[in-house]
Image 1 (tube, rainbow, N blue to C red):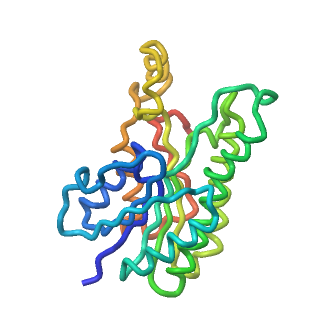
Image 2 (cartoon, rainbow, N blue to C red; image 1 turned 120 degrees about the vertical axis):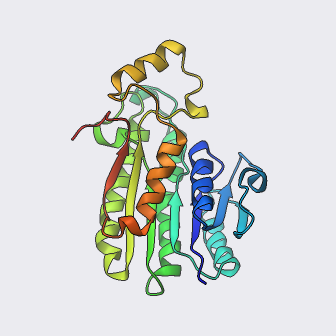
Image 3 (cartoon, rainbow, N blue to C red; image 1 turned 30 degrees about the vertical axis):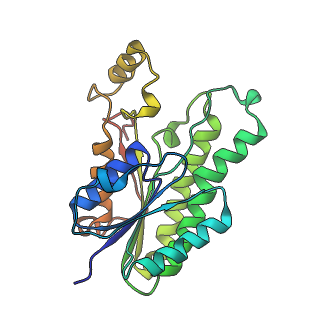
Length: 244
């Protein structure tokens, strides 16, 4: 029996780990990457009947990305899902205080490496079997974000990439969608004061922060057969913050 395999880039993040657990629950084999934040995946993911492989991957190293996908091809018999949920946040600053180094890092990790991962994944799956790509973006791609303009630009680029890929790869039976979280209760947001958390809850129609499981549930839906006629879309998982 063919068992589906999900490659999760950035699986050591809060959202990445929740996503990995959800795919494991659904019986997927897993190829998980981490960089600086190493996680004991074998302890976190309790399913024992799946193949679980972990890899160190520095997304700023172009050659390492190619080597990683070559290794995954050797380690797994069947590949059908790529989830890109890695990224770096911007230090809040008005645009004239943003350094060239920060601009380069944000674009390198958040969008250039996503393009490279999609390219390598597509090489392995196009013409072989149905496949799908889910990119984890952000609600800021819709309306921007003051003092995080470069970060918002990288996330807007992700939605543009998704639409183009949907058109480009659709006839090869590869789907591509974006999950765009709103305010999610992750370590990244633990530095918020109680007053700031309350404010974010108040401006969200559902009156709470999202959970990593909210994002993971949406991601696995888009990767599943239940979403087989959905491609090129951005799904806002934001409690109603962006209303279209």
